[in-house]
Length: 466
Image (tube, rainbow, N blue to C red; front, side, top):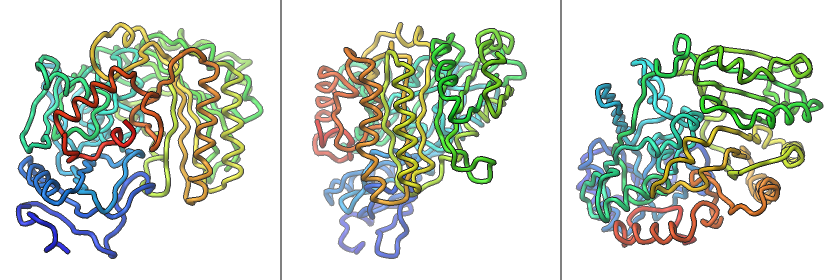
């Protein structure tokens, strides 16, 4: 079959022409993932340029993979799958307060490398996702109150374009390069292969945390205490800039006393002094609330362990998808309805019991004050709701589509009058792009795609529906 692939002799790196014996691609979700025509694992930018040339000659669409966690990605026999796992640069410049990060680096690698040097940069809540891919979708982070969205800390991108040329773009770029930089900050998938990017890095000591450890408080409630948990969450849903609040519905994992039963996890992270954290969260220590819990715990967490509790969700394969909405407000009734929809769905479909529903709240003062042309909208919304489906069976995956829609619609109904907004990295195939961008930004996105990739060399999650 390789003999039928034109130009393959150009490659000076590892590649595979898949056949029936080739293992499934190791992605977080198997949904819409088939064997590609070619798998290339580049070592250098020249290897990436050669892969672009081969894709163009064979009319293949390039899918670039970093952490392989994008649930919106589809791969088929018309794809050239570019596995960026060898692009592992993490280069901290303390004098400039920046860090260069390669196209194959995952979040956990950034987190540990910087923490070892006494530094950090805003990150999402999973160590296993690709840092570049997360950034291209805007980047949601628990440090949003202090630093805004992850792309608000972006310095520059370096990428291989459809022409095969290497481009470097930043906020000072002009004309078409400036437009590309802005789109890469929030709607950047499918415009080129990002080989590295540069973001701001901050000293951990600037947070004034004891021993550079994050103050955390966790309360776990049984299902009958739902009303108490929701009321407590809503009371703390406008935290200070240093705070980040979450309310999660999950099923108790195997090996625990109430394995399989619904549990409610109220979590608070504070990126500042412990004494300030305790004042901001005094409600979480009240006897009438703590008495309703099965676990109440305060912990000082090493910064590099911030995502450790989410590692159970990092395993690859099976079917996974995420439905999300960003809200200006919510109510106890809306949250309770979401809980009940999640509870019933995970009872009706036992193979989906690892699915969860998470509502989070943060301070928007920093992000609301930022006025630029990056692809981030709804900056004044301080509530996020995510339903994560994890399922083994195709029939369960299909059944969950309407369930996810219902949950999102229920939350949005309370936010009536607001334009619907979601996260680009949670895009679900076939959904309306107006959930993420207004028409003016969609027009810019079309123009940038036409300017930089008119022939569609790079697979894009946006342009089948634009």
